[in-house]
Length: 301
Length: 257
Image (cartoon, chains in turn orange, red):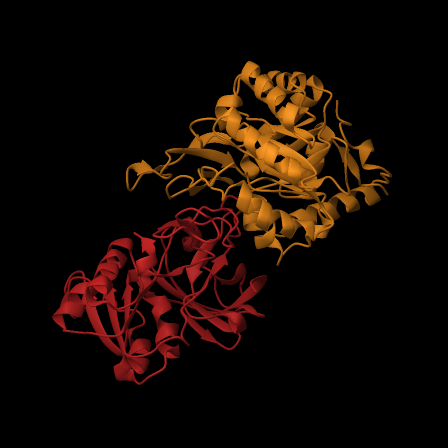
């Protein structure tokens, strides 16, 4: 039985990864999850200098999901390279570093700095965070700017690049086509849906940032639809995510056309979800006599 | 090390309007727990995904006591569970109070649902009853846990409506009763903790305060539950510490409230 997949030229032992920002760099979850069993660990977004993020409250529960406005708090690339990368080095899994920035220059600073590191294996470029005012989402909502930033990053990146796409656009397929034209090796989707929650007793916003990115099982049908649309639009591989909390959920994304899947919000309420998804996919394959996972990827047309 | 466990409820009772006491039997969590730590309690309703962080009130062998206030749908669900029902929990989480480092007369402040975590601390702190001063703040005459505190410490009461003790908050009671001590420990609403921080600066006495914030993961990964710190934090490299992982107990001088 073959569960390995090739993601932008990098061989993953299975298609199960963590979603950026929900798993730190794996340290906090190492008590619960054997990182060696994951296809890849995708790190929390890292910028060229430390970011303080947004004020609290940064999170609120919603029906079947949550909204967050962390604002990409991160310790900056130097700390990340000296602390987080060596930690991940110990494990037999692939490392995907999520890169964020306020400007093209800031993205490029991180990508250039990562040229010196033998890990990561892949880069995921976050052009879709809804909680950062400048940069981030500004690059992720217009096909022309998305193509341009992809081109600029591709020029300096040593590793293959996956562009992370926002669902808060008119056509996510157009965005995928644009980054493919810019030279992206892959795309990942969906980032969170912009949402809002109001605290009726305090007559104020539940989040200090007013709006936040919605995630969790409630968003899954939207995410599956978008993965399917993008799979019909581009040839580059897709990392599918959005509300996955079981192997059944992950299989929907694979069948819609994703080469790999990321588990995000579920890590917060069930830290062992990634492993359960790995095992559940294997069980599904055994039960249904699927020899190679590629028989499932994109099988629903 | 923290663990995910399915625990069994040993006893659940209502202590005061909206305040419940739940004893749970754990496999390892209770044995690894310290005062000031908390556990994450998960709802059985799939529409409520995130764990509810609840402070540890008492630790007894394999048993943990949680005393919590019903504030929303999650805690409203928990209150209806009875003996032999099971719950999914994770813990123990957070740093807790450092009992070993303590010297001198301790003053423990508990305000509202900040009262419960002070109990195990009062039990564990070294010294006689007169070396452990406990100042508790309640809304009214429904003084939950007071009997338990009376057994291990010298207790002073403040109530919002003045029905018992001093009318006002724990700081009013501290002043009215002319209390003093060498170290402060506190858990309660933010305005109260601001007052404790100011008092500790004025009296030049360290204050260990337990903070609360909306949480998702409970293990330090999601960076939702941050508090502003006076110095650059060692983990985040900005002026933010994680309440769930680096706290919930902080030296008051190290945080901005």
